[in-house]
Length: 301
Image: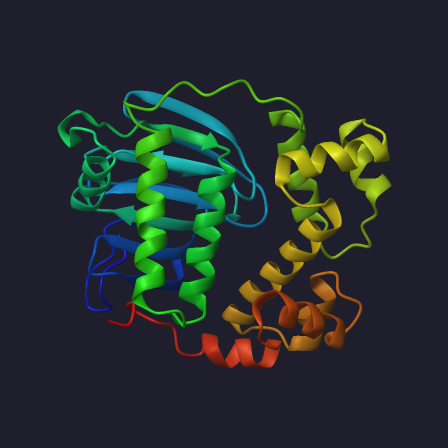
């Protein structure tokens, strides 16, 4: 899924994808941050289990795999899980399909299953379409940040995150997973999707709590509580996080100046962006831009 630079991309598309970053570990995890144009995307049967987490603006996507078909609007943080040996056909209806792809080898999943006391031969990863899983999402974002920063924490940290992903898949998204308890509190699925999509589409605007809450038809005070229960952070922190992440994506593409990026991501000026980026990732936009100039191909051994 995340091959060496000299290897072909195993995913066939009728247009050329943009590969922003990728890497792989020796212990069974590959990463790829990519954006695909509108059209049909064919994914052949692979030995690895794939986890695809949607990044950025909402995108209307259809997918057929494992005898099932799903069409919906993918918003930032939505997760698809594709079992091993499962081919898939995706139809991308617009230009917004950016995703972080994780590929986990059978050996990594088998090892984790056995360590949890299960017979790995009986563990089958489930086919999932556009689900929400806050714990899995947070691990994926940690891997994305580590990859983009050229793996400053070293192999041990990345390996531990890879094991965490495998453990979450086995314990929550497999044939041996216990049924989920009904979720209490928080925004319902549709309201949460609508809220996250609205934030993504309006990051450059002067967003307010009341303005975002109006999308859900809930009072601002009630919405504030429900959003935190659903997202794990207050809405104003979530908006800042997304603005910083959008700025990082634009710095990676290297098409706009830092001052322009600050404005299109909703920061009042360049120093405003720099302050929040340093607080979030420990680097200034200029340092981040230099870092992205040397895209990694593998985790340091």
